Image: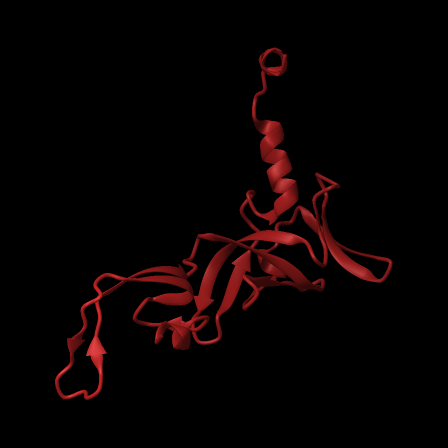
Length: 168
């Protein structure tokens, strides 16, 4: 299939990086293509999964390197993202503990960014040639994914009596 040749590469036709596809043959009847012997055409429907991060959108990736000047992230296992110090919220302070660097929130001590952390970042730009993302941690809804999810669960109002009645 020709789709295999463009998978995990930026493709201008699709305006994105093809991550996966699902092809189904629409008709079992083939049409001989004139002038292209021995080729024939078959009608096929495909569903494509594309990666094309736009500015102001959010992506998640794993932190692979931290320094006082930047945080380096791998998104989907193939796209590199960098967040420079000017794009890291003032709330985060760089610290070194046991020889490893991390960024820790001054207002929420459990909100820490260290090696291996899954990070949600805002896309500032995407370079299609090298599949590189320039990211930002300036918006409040960026940072450690686990911490952000826990924070959003705590913000939801819960009716404890209603929960008890359901369990009984």
